[in-house]
Length: 242
Image 1 (cartoon, rainbow, N blue to C red):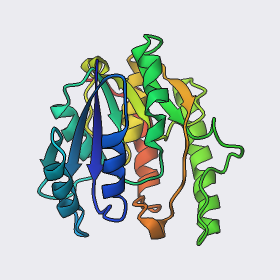
Image 2 (spheres, rainbow, N blue to C red):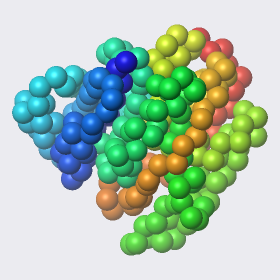
Image 3 (cartoon, rainbow, N blue to C red):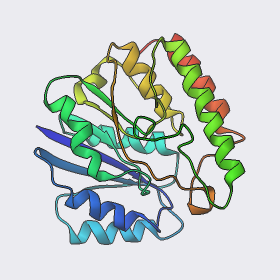
Image 4 (cartoon, rainbow, N blue to C red):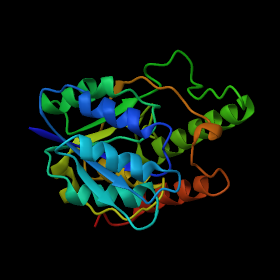
């Protein structure tokens, strides 16, 4: 079996080289395909990515003309993926690539077609985001996360602990059942909602998580993105899968 690891990159110069090195060196029991989608960063990330790809053979690099959002970048990566399993990896260091075997095992062992790496299952407190410089913002985002998780679970009849986790890992053939169109961070809710509506209920496994604040590069726009998330949760619940 082969896993396609899709890494969208935009303005992550502080972390992208270390992240790519960790992904490249992570040992797995199955073949690994790394697909980097770089969205014409303005902070030097593109040059760092190009340097890494030049020094390490076998990596698929997609260079976009302009940034159009994480969802658009991931969808571009999906079009080039040839693996049996898809794993989406952000270019920051909030998640630990050492968790790859844990999130891949239930699929390779035939237990499920879809895995979520849950930050809450491994945390000792529901407030998983800790911003040392802006604790009030961290509390606000933790409460917002709780609200959106509850809203999603009620609408889809699920009891997921972490619908918004980055670690969404699934068999590639799951994509045959629906199409995706979201461009920004609402893509995560579209993907999750359509996977569930197509009959692929995720198995959650605990993963490590080290939050970063806006000063460290978090790109969520708190006065716009939550409205897009709510709209996408509802839209995905009632619209056709294709």
